[in-house]
Length: 361
Image (cartoon, rainbow, N blue to C red):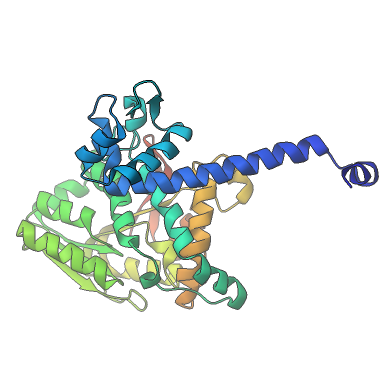
């Protein structure tokens, strides 16, 4: 059969074999990613990062986990070239160069956070497959642990650099925050950035709105524990949001593209700004043009997340389904159409995945 194909259709057998090998590698990498998610959630990476070469029993004891499961997990990590193995001593080691992007507060960022998306995709596969057939969408409640993952992501991409890299993009805003202004975070999730600002700037007043009750409940508990009296959190659908000239500073972090009507939301956020107010928006920094994203960091993961989450979430609200990779060009155009002035686009050297817009009323 192969010979016939080669003769009649110019079938390249060596190219087919090479691609089959690539598919095998992709399947292997997907399996390793799920195991990385488990390593992150169980704390095994943190446990191993502080240990010398150790047996599976020693690692399991240190992590307070079952040795048999830890041993099988370690095998996946060794064959995935994440952990090294000494067969004579039967010891395992997480090299510090690997721990540098796999542990909490890692110097290169904790990439194991994103491995959790791979596991979630499997969990919602049947639901999303049904959407392919019906064209319908989903709701936030159908995704296990989604806000936990997004909070971890936001913690290292937003909150960690909030005062050193991000707020300085909006020139003069920190001085205004110190004096005392009204601030809104639209689509705040677990509100880690908003809470950090409320702690840092006690004279300012902070409001956080999010559609999801579990995220707001988690944020509210954090606010209670910290004893913050200058922050208000509320479960609220931003569809039809209308608070004319109430805030001097509005933020949204990775939230706009999921909305039912992103353009109308941006218009309402502009109306909610007082004269001279500032809007700071973060979103994924990919292009609206697929061909421009071939070398964009983790582009396939982002498109996959878009397919199983961001697109169906928007469609489930009756929205356009712009998706995660709606593109910085689209975002910039919408900011202009919404009436914002002096729209400035920024990228940060340490964070090539995201784009930041600063705009005025």
